[in-house]
Length: 149
Image (cartoon, rainbow, N blue to C red):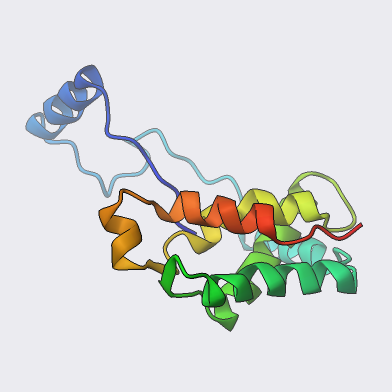
């Protein structure tokens, strides 16, 4: 997934610089205020729970159609491949599990199209020159592919 993070504010960047100047070690996770939130057993339980999430065949087809449409869009030079389909499906299952749902909905899938696919496509150069973005093109694709009922 590609999660877009904005640049820090001026105050946040000043803080980063000050901590760096004072010898902050980014490898010292405890000093950074980070702590372990899951051990290996918890991660394995989460993976097992995710594997038990149900996906209707029509939702699998929806995932395939969304990704395949990136390969036929005139706005995209190089579309996303089958690995992107697998990752979109797996991310959707994880989101369903985190939401406490026993099954994947089209809304789970739609909510993850941008983070999963935005870095897996290459726009047509003319679209880029006109200021088009992967997010805009993917939103158009989301709107074009029929949602299963």
